[in-house]
Image (cartoon, rainbow, N blue to C red; front, side, top):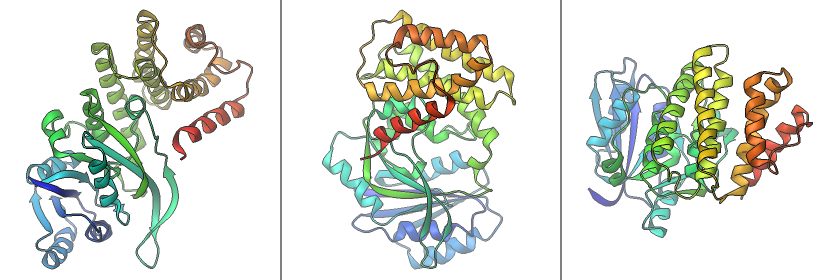
Length: 363
């Protein structure tokens, strides 16, 4: 393993039309020692031709591994196994790094020697301008603090927004090849569940492409895998009574918010899974009751999660659904001064969530 070397691992499957942009964005990075590992996961398009072209021009910075199609996680793991870098970045073949992103991320590790992971800002794009630059069309907001708490809610950024130490893989293991989505969230959560140190880097960006053929565009598959992650998070929270170590109260409420969000999304797709997720949320409230009093450490993060929960409860409460009324009663009993006024309308609830999110993500 080479000290300060950054290994950029790119899994590629039938994205020959996108791959040049990903490769160019990686090869153009400055102020960083770099190796690029592309794993061709059994592509049947012109991926091999694209790779041959770029490798012939960058023989000392780029390696290619070809394998039969095994899926995204297996491809990333194969790249991991031949990487030499102290630091790792997982760049999907349809995404892009922005100028100097890797140097900015690496500098965070130099400034914080005990750091295990860093995550930067990311924006969405669908099209490229005439100079090959992604055209901004929204962004994935970056929470600036309490990232372990937010990972109890949902994923916080796309894979290439993270840079991690290779030593962390030795500690937590590779990507779970059994997952067909959320495999990155699973890895980040396993890391913070073993007390890995994660910081936000708001000074640089990566670009996340939105298109109809992307894995994330299959929302039903995404939501079902979100449910799997909520169950895994629930098991860990129940097993480790000190997790999250600096925000147990906030982590439990974030977990409740995540379960209820995915339950609502799956309501018309899988009633059974929705019911299971609401049961997990109720169990988290039981933990809140049984472990009281828990110290409030991050009041703004807690407020955001409660506003989010009450946005989800608003409609079923109007319909007098008993599960929502029970949740409302139990949460008001514990967080009465932080719960929104029961007479607020839906638009006001949405405004509360938006304002709270801005406080946590803007700098």
